[in-house]
Length: 205
Image (cartoon, helix red, strand yellow):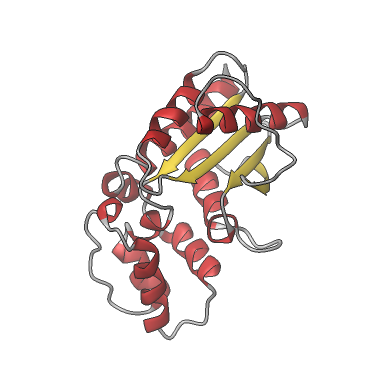
């Protein structure tokens, strides 16, 4: 029987994390990829209490390392941290560096959504159609859609579904096919999903 893994879940806003006690889309994705044995607590990446060490090193790599130290110090078993690329390609390189570093021995799954987390929500038109109770056309290559956040908001506005945007994202995350997201978002979602799966491998070793 697997032990429950206590995870610190960190991202940029309510659309990913959910508002208040509501379960957000990122947690739903993580649970579906990893399995049910996750005990998640959430925080925003902008939390000023998590201090980035001064000195050499890239900005986002150092921020990821700061969150890893914070999670380890506070008794978590693992860290899941996702940020948006936001037209800064170097964020992928920096998070990859932090993912691979041996400077901190702590389990983590770091992800960079291309160009934003909203692309993951657009990736499966079947899930969108089910949640919005309408026929939604395929949103091809969502990682290349520049106005992806606005596209998601427009789909929700045009529907008759009474959901907030964070509730909409969570509902889609619960229905979307993980393999479809990996195919539709190969630069962002696919490597993130693989890193979440490796948390389970690490826990068995």
